[in-house]
Length: 207
Image (cartoon, rainbow, N blue to C red; front, side, top):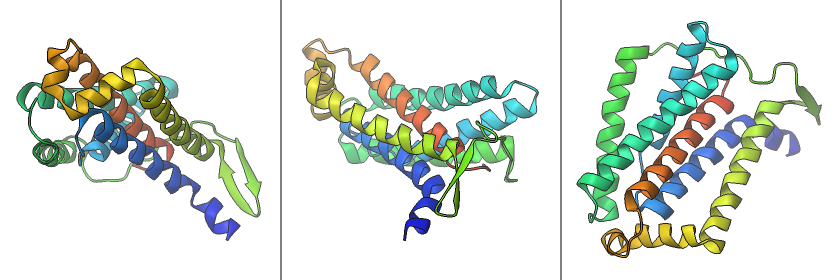
């Protein structure tokens, strides 16, 4: 049982990060985004392509995270601008169209061949109960837990969190009350895109 749980850390950490990104968008932007994993995959491919072009590993990681965040933020701008008072179902359907479009673009740009990417922390693995665990896998789990706890604390304990919840429930009313709807929306989408990109890279050795 312990062996199976430990061997599931790589994929478990990735799924947890994507799950946090989805919950983040739903709770704070009122959108059940189908495209969040696509943004993450696109950012991961940008990361790999940047590394293949000779950029240092750390710089390539930052470029990939930025690409995922920017793409996701652009989707947030579209939903805030074109669908400010639409219901959650309508906005979620829009993300499906965006996901299909982005998948088509990704296949044209990157192809469908799996790409390898070096580990973030080479040689930093350890063994527990006969299962080899890398520091990257542990980082994925820690990131998911940290983002989840941070989201909970933000919503429960801060004024910004209350404003974001109001933005999710009644966006037009929130904007009339002076809440900077655009800034909050773009920030939430960008954070979810970066988290999804981290999931695509940290949770897997190949993209």
